[in-house]
Length: 176
Image 1 (cartoon, rainbow, N blue to C red):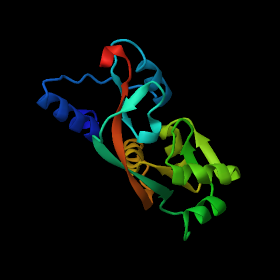
Image 2: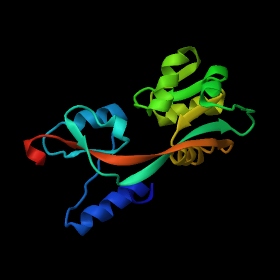
Image 3: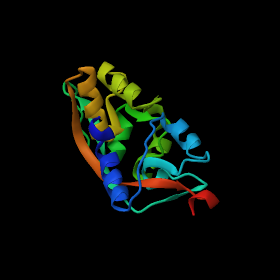
Image 4: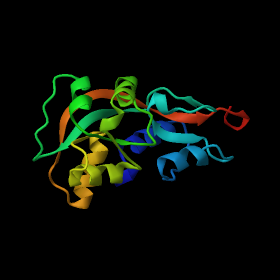
């Protein structure tokens, strides 16, 4: 992505104003959290506040992301509540994410309708192939990947919420 993505660009501008140079390394989500524990790293970004794990502390919001229901253009999906969505349709989710409570509680309640993917790319492929009726994710990530992969029939059905993005700072002596 240009400038490593919009959120990284915002973080870089904030840190540059304080004279801090940002160096970003990209890893799969679980690995990013493990690498961030190592000496020389200050943390991981971006994270929803729910995704700040033990041993880390979340910053003030740096940026915002949306959490949306995504679908294929040729798929008819109608629902009048989040419960109906989870009850009636197969839902694609990324296994390594910690979802906001409104989604997490439905995951626990409607486990038979959950289709897990290992990452955003797999989630897109699962949605595009029809393995799930919908996917719940950040629409800008899903649409970016669909454009990159030449998948043209993915669209936003509903934006469920906006979520703040924070830096999860390692909470130890090195980062004080």
